Structure formats: structure tokens, C-alpha cells
Amino acid sequence: MRTIMRQRDPYNAFLDHDPAEVPHAPEGPLAGLTLAIKDIYEVAAQRTGGGNPQKLAEAVSASRTAPAVQALLDAGARFVGRTQTDELTFSLMGQNAHYPHPVNPAAPDRVTGGSSSGSAAAVAGGLADIALGSDTGGSIRAPASFCGLVGLRTSHGAISLEGAMPLAPSLDTFGWFARDIGTYEKVAEVLLGPTAEMAPRPFRLAVLDDLLLSPAEAAEHTRMVEQISTAVGSPEAARPLLHSIDDLYWCFRKIQSYEAWAVHGPWISAADRKLGPGVRERFEFGSTIDEATFASETARRNDFRDAFAQMLGDDGILVMPTVPGAAPLKDAGFEDLQAYRERALRLLCLSGLSGFPQITLPLGTVEGAPFGISLLGPAGSDMALIGMGRAILGKEG
Image (cartoon, rainbow, N blue to C red):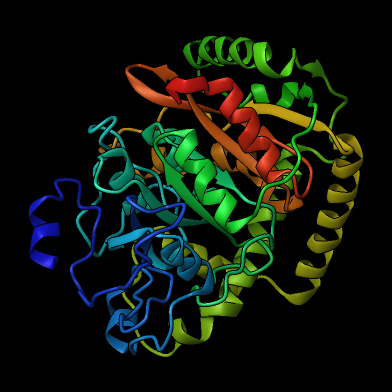
């Protein structure tokens, strides 16, 4: 299987290690669908590298498969390979310094996004029907938008992360990609179970729309909102958030970085891990955050979550840009990529800090590249958001 996968992987989506067979049920709701797995999830008899060659070299083969992954195999999905991840999942662009960068099949001159880079490339390129990822700061939503896919950041804690390499536990969530909403919903029914749909009360926040990159993105976003309105209603303007977007961005950054250093700092400090640019600086930033700062930002987060929950209620849906625009060009300079990342995180941090689910739908195109739009709902509304996605995308989705 390893040789076949290498020959049919023009997108650098898959890793070439541990080709152990992975059994799956012959029948089930996912029978006939292929499954790729981000290299942070344990798979029995395989090692997990987490995007770092030294971590892979030190890893031992897993004794069992992560429960959420096993549930998909038991539902009939067939494993076809492990996919690339950005280093220790601490990046948003899909450019791991240690491996050939995955190619964005929908826009080859642009990045795939990360950290679930290989998974997004595999699905967008037709190499897998389903590919698993994770979302801490946007690692499902950004690649899905960049590559023209459906992607959901699930409610925090809704799907078990047992057997997954953590980054920032209070922010980490399980996720997956699919090209169409029907396949996406089948996976969700296995992992989340069916729930009742809801009549949405959509709204928008001007401060989020202001983060779009240019008039071209703004015009396409307006068109996508109009398309969504036919299915869920026209969004009303909402009152401003309790905290500024800049404050929420820094709250997210500090909490994520503090927790990431708590998880990986001891391993990083034990030797020269040759971390790639950007990743190294983010961990270094995490090492400077003290407990008092973490506690203060956690209190800010709790205040935001409580106020945001009140704003959403049981049926509120925030209609918003997933990211500021199409994926950055892959040959953009480091500073340009960082600037895009910081702008994107101001959009992506709302779901992360609140723990509420957010789905991105592949409705738009800017400069010939995919550009997604998102629906963010209250805690536990994951299946309702997917149902809305089905109504919006229709049979073509």
C-alpha cells in the first residue's frame, strides 16, 4: 500500500512511514469511503510523529487506535494513509520546514493552510473521501476555506481526543474534511449522533466583516451572505462584542501559547529539536507567559464566553467570514504570511475561546481560488449547523 500511495500522491499529502494494515468493518454507514488520518492520532501498530522527525524517531507503535478514529473504521471507512501536519500542529499555513509542502489542489499557487495540511490536500485532490484533522486555532476551518472543502470546528469536548497528540487542551477539537455535505453528515452521524434541527436566528458583526482583505473579498462575502439568506434568513446586525477583537486575539494567543508550552515545553527543552521558523518563536512566546497572565486571560475568556452565549441563546447563528480571503500565495514572504495569520486569528478565535461550533462552507471564489463562509452557533449545535449547510449547498454540495 505504501508504494501505491506514493505513486498517486502528487500533492505531498501523505507520509511514508509505518504501512501497517488497518482493519475496517466490511459494512456500515461509511462503507465504500476512504479515510486519511492526520499524523497526530494513534493508529494501532503505527507511530505518531506530530510533524516533527525527532518526535517520530522517538515514538513507539501505538497499542490501540484512538477511539474516535476506531469508530469510523468500525463504521466501514477504509484507511488509505497518514497525512502531513504542520510541526506539532502549531501553524496555520501548511508549510512544515521538515517535509515537502502539501499542494493545494484547488489553487496550486497558494498554501493549503494548516495544521491539517495533508488532510485538506488529500480530500481536495480526490485521494480520500474523508480526512481527519484537528482544530485548535483554525486548523480545520482555514484549510477547508483555502481548499474549497466543508469543515467543522466541533463543540469543544463533543468528540473524544483520547489517543491524539495535544497542543492546547482547552482549545483542541477533533475535526474532518469532506468535499460534499452529504459525506460530511454521514461522518457526523457516526461521531455525534443525530440531533434535532433548529430554526436559526442569523446575525452579523460589522467588526468581523471589516477584517476582509479587499473590496473583492467584501463583494464575494456579500454575495455568499445573500445565498445563505435564502436558506436561513437575512442576518440582522448584532450589538458589539463585550471585548474588542484585538483583546480577544491576544487572549487566545496567550492561552494557546501557555498551554502549548506546558504540553511540549519539557520535550522541546530537552534537546535541540530544530523547530521550524514561526513554530519556534510561538513556543518561545509561550515560555514567557506566567501563571498570573494565564489566569487573567482565562477570566477574560470566561467573561467573553458567557456574554457570547447570551448573545447566541439557543438559536442564534453568527454569519461571518471564515478567514480574511483566499489562501496566501505559497511564495509569499514570511512577514506577509504572519500578517495574514494574525488577521485570520482575529476571525478564528471566537469559536476557539467560546468552545462553540463553527462550520465553513465552500461557497465563494476570489481571484480563482476558494473562499469560504462560516456559520457559528451555540454549544452543541454541531448537527444543526451541518443541516443548515445541507440546505445552503443543496444537492451540488
